[in-house]
Image (cartoon, rainbow, N blue to C red; front, side, top):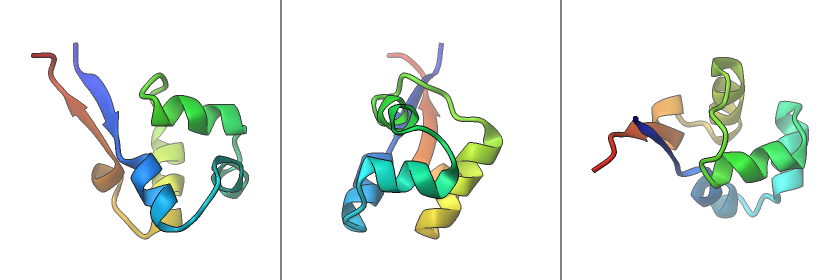
Length: 69
């Protein structure tokens, strides 16, 4: 089964943004951002697009699925 890979933490760190700050900007709880960064939660399309918009990136730049090896 494909595994979610995310570069969310990298993008957030590059903007000196805390998890809570990002959560507030996209309308979710901080725990959701934590789970996203750990690959434990698959974002909805809307959430992925909202996050990408915050960073001026594409959804594919931040999130991807990789096949298990």
